[in-house]
Image 1 (tube, rainbow, N blue to C red):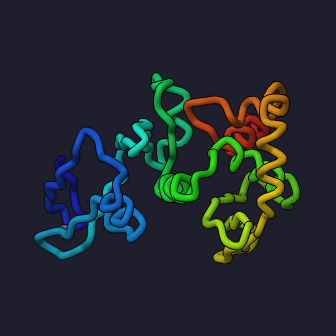
Image 2: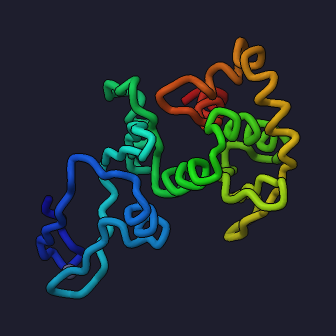
Length: 196
Ligand SMILES: [Zn+2]
């Protein structure tokens, strides 16, 4: 696929129809090197953000949507209901962390709802699961203060209690909307509230 550099040079970056989320792909995504290529004229690093398809080693199909297509995607595109959607690299990286710790995305998003209900401006807040250490789930909270990331540690017991009540919880909104495939995200609930 051809991409135009800021210097107007056309740079060819090979893009596959599907990427397997194996260790090599995961490492290059986490290091920010995935799909990046340097321009052969000015040397600038280009990192195109385009729709991509991944497949996990458990054979889950993951559709990656660029951040700038967040809102248009769900209005205009036919979504593949057999795929799980992630929007933007931070959400893809978060999904990799969720997979590596063997958590369920549905439950992670419900925990985020409980966190986001307590922040002053939910629409400007982005919460991302980061890690699991010492029986605590670690979330990074972006947007509370400019250029600062808050860290929140949630006890595993909360995850377990949501898992236990899961079937009952998702009968009603906002839980129902949040866990609805193919885009499982607390951000859908926030978008609904904002009237988008
Ligand atoms: Zn260039």
